[in-house]
Image (cartoon, rainbow, N blue to C red):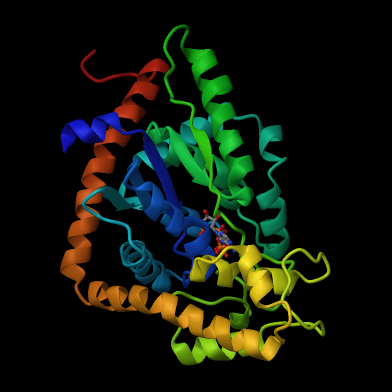
Length: 342
Ligand code: AQP
């Protein structure tokens, strides 16, 4: 087991416990990790420190953290093969983040698109933490010497920033020969599809969208799924298309159907070229319910067994902590921090 772990390349990823996970988080992220876990040594965190960069309810944070970890496993992540852990349990994330903060020019941060988008939603309540989010993400990745990071379109810019900080502000400045931090590469997933809101096909499906009808959550009951899809935005065309730029909602639902049914987009387009919205909505509803059912069953078992879940998180934490401490020590030493007993 140990020998195999060392020969595999390493990946790291995570989801924020900011609310109920939706099919976008699943199809755009977790499902890809499931595919990658055999090939890579996989570290998956529940990024709760990121979750407090926007307004949050302290009563929900811990509950959402546990529920997110349980959903990783329910969606098919194998805790024996992967390290699943909670970000805030490993203080090296915050510590490396501070060091990287001090090394990163502010104008690099001012280019971050996600900050611009999210700060608009926050009105007058934009925190320094939200601005600093990409540097905490850089710390998350760099702490584990990740070789690869599976990213969707929206996270590409943040990974690029992590690479620039590691290369230009740490390795180039503080080490002449050997790299201090490993430079991670992106894995752009073929199926890293961006799932859009059910009520606005131009907007990403998002946990923090205040309109509950905008997303299908992984733990939604069949009744709720049926209601949400029934109310999903449609248009006046006959037939469900993928490539018509005027039909964002048709494209989105067809993509969801294609991924869940395992059928190619072109096959689905042929199948539904003359199908009306009412019939298509019924079919996609059945498909979504069927696909989510095994996840929901597995989730129920896990969430009712806090002992098992706790053990998974303890084991994950131990493996992660070990690596994180080593990287942090290496960085602090190279950057000139005082070391006890030297
Ligand atoms: N709509 C989406 N389609 C495809 N992938 C998505 N992801 C999120 N939404 C979609 C992917 O899920 C992973 C974890 O996301 P996150 O929780 O760290 O942050 P996020 O991207 O900001 O997700 P949300 O759901 O929109 O959360 P809030 O509302 O809290 O900001 C990432 O890999 C992301 O690409």
